[in-house]
Image 1 (cartoon, rainbow, N blue to C red):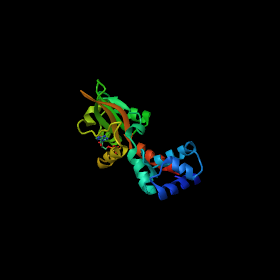
Image 2 (image 1 turned 90 degrees about the vertical axis):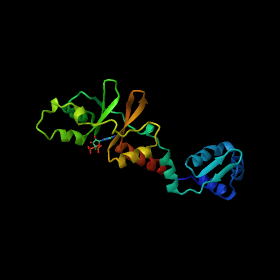
Image 3 (image 1 turned 180 degrees about the vertical axis):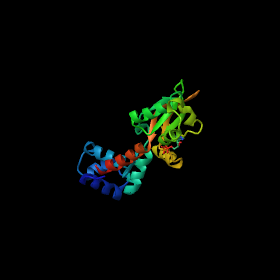
Image 4 (image 1 turned 60 degrees about the vertical axis):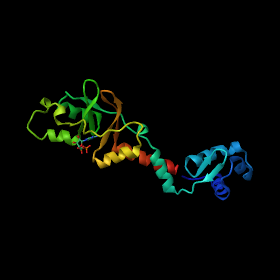
Length: 209
Ligand code: ADP
């Protein structure tokens, strides 16, 4: 993150004098508290400064990579997942392959008639099923899918980092984002390796703005 001259000045004042009130920082710079407010907000949000009520601002002393790591740990699945693509458990492998191509995704989630999660289909699951001589229109997906309770899931409020760890530890490409219901889990999203990569790239890009 590129700091303005004034933001650098503020950091130096707080480094030397903190904890110090916003009023005092403003006095030292011959500015009003109101003029300073946006800069203080940016520096606090970015993690350079911390503010304690009735005490004032102090310097956190965090390095660039510590600040980036703090930001990374704040990301939630909620802001980064994609829409889910689901198929019914009665559809054929042939139809699932067609859906995968048309929707341009690598993972399909399989749901039952109550729209609850029952399985996952990956590209390789479908390829494997295509290797025999059977007619793919005759094989229902529930025969070949990975099924509950083996399925790894995540929730919207989970940390993106935790979900990313699940992808890595289980060597899978996507997690269904679910809402827990009494009778099972409703699929409301799809968290993929691409989502995680994009969040990571966006974070670094924002830092450089
Ligand atoms: P591919 O098989 O195309 O490389 P994955 O690595 O995602 O794609 O899938 C590997 C295996 O793990 C497949 O058999 C798939 O059904 C299963 N799988 C995929 N996603 C999940 C998940 N969220 N939970 C459990 N198993 C999964």
